Amino acid sequence: MRIIQAKNYEDMSRKGADFIAAQVLLKPNCVLGLATGSTPVGAYQRLAEKYRSGDLSFAQVTSINLDEYVGLSPDNDQSYRYFMNENLFRHIDIDIARTFVPNGLEKNAEKACTDYDAILAAHGGIDLQLLGLGLNGHIGFNEPADHFPCGTNCVDLTPSTIEANSRFFPTYDSVPKQAYTMGVQAIMQAGCALMLVSGKAKAGIVRQAFTGAITPQVPASVLQLHKNFVLIADEDALSEMKL
Ligand code: F6R
Image 1 (cartoon, helix red, strand yellow):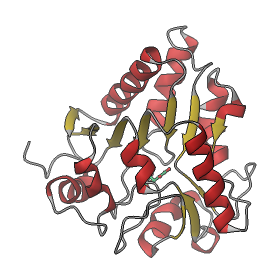
Image 2 (image 1 turned 45 degrees about the vertical axis):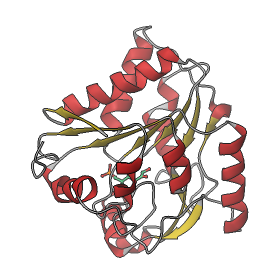
Image 3 (image 1 turned 180 degrees about the vertical axis):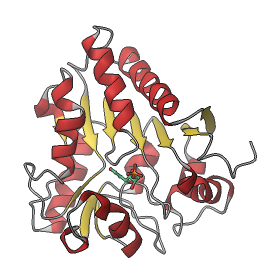
Image 4 (image 1 turned 180 degrees about the horizontal axis):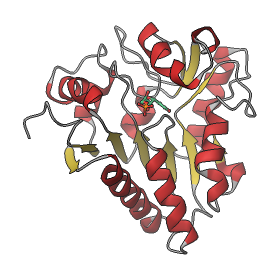
């Protein structure tokens, strides 16, 4: 596990984008595992800038996102497909046909999950998986549980995650209560797992996840066992860690 300390959110975003850009330069036809949420937005903006300035092309990249809310269509502005289109894909030259997000409209959960695992397998897994960190230690939407879910799974979101997500929705009741999420196996098998974390609110869970016991009650703690895990976090997020 490697920790790269950033000064603040801007610095974390720049370092994160540089890291992802290096992956794309090294392997132009790489598979990027991508995340949504507020944390990666700055890094996505930097990547779009690199594309606009002619320094980077995503023309051969495939992307496979971590998760999607159950029941939301791609054109729902709260869906993760919509988020990715708006925050990254429409600003770069990625072939939209090679961007994958779980199908939130698939009502048959088993089919939705099997289909997504088949997409992962067909692409030979992920070269670089970008991750954020939930306040409760979730990665993707793999919530604290008594085991690490292996493959793509349908999750009942915990009250704390629903609460955290409600900032993007008009009312608490309109926040979806379930999501399809990539499982822990695909994340652990990624050539590199890159996590971005910012802010004091995450300092406690960062300490717990990366200096505490490896337990499915803190899903991100499993990354301590990843062969190539890089944490880029700002000073606030690292403020409870003894480096
Ligand atoms: C998003 C995802 C989640 C978020 C996490 C942190 O695709 O998988 O695990 O990364 O909830 O969210 P933010 O960045 O909004 O704090």
